[in-house]
Length: 226
Image (cartoon, rainbow, N blue to C red; front, side):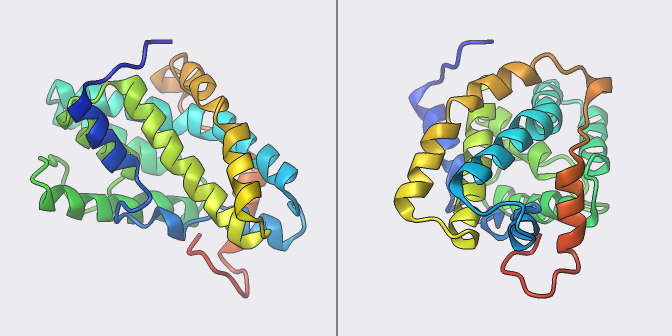
């Protein structure tokens, strides 16, 4: 795996991109977790850990991180056609309407943020924007290397998912911090796995995640948008 290095300025920008205060709405999406908890598939911290580990290693590392890498490469080379391809592929890889909504709603919010921060965004806004692709465009603009950007992306995803579990299981704040500590060592492993994924291998097939996300679309009472 490539060494994770960055300048002070790039590190500060990475912290900005990865912050839970970034106004893209990641806190509003449970990505099927709410349905899994409602159905009793998950009822304690250990089961949350197992659910997130599987999603991290076999979905995010197989889909989002390779797309992030491709988007950053295309952005650096100013290949707008390839960026559009990455965006289309990202949205096509979402197995349910809600998983697509998670990516596109956060993408639209990220687009507005990039405009406000004067970060060039070369993709057309019609047809849907992928958050992971725009994250890559912003990271490349701020000269954040891919391994570092990937680590920030994963941390943001993980923190939002643990925050959702904290409300839903529920977990105490100490349990939530312990859960973050348990899962942190998996982030470099996910990046390493993603580096082996070629473009024609991008995609995942976690049936439980897809079923939970689809079930959440019609869940009677819920806190999260997806």
